[in-house]
Image 1 (cartoon, rainbow, N blue to C red):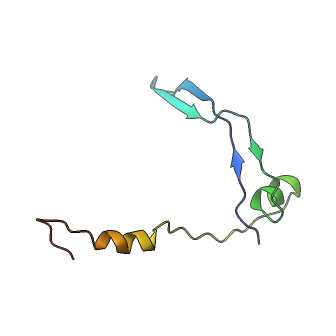
Image 2 (tube, rainbow, N blue to C red; image 1 turned 60 degrees about the horizontal axis):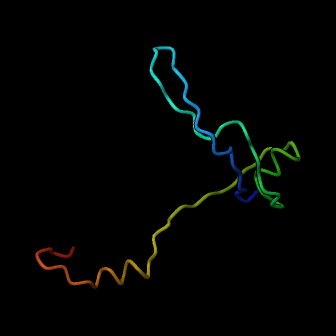
Length: 80
């Protein structure tokens, strides 16, 4: 069991052409780097050669701000 690591693939933007002749852009290049965070998925996979399982949860709602904004007066709009 690991925690989420931090990594970067660089900042290059490379223009390529697909088999049908259409342009597309590969963002990030080939320059992979990761931070040395003990217990991270990056360290487990890349440094220790292990399988990594990282449970994730994503909810970026700022609850205090949401409640505050709900109190703003908005003429012409009905609150639900």
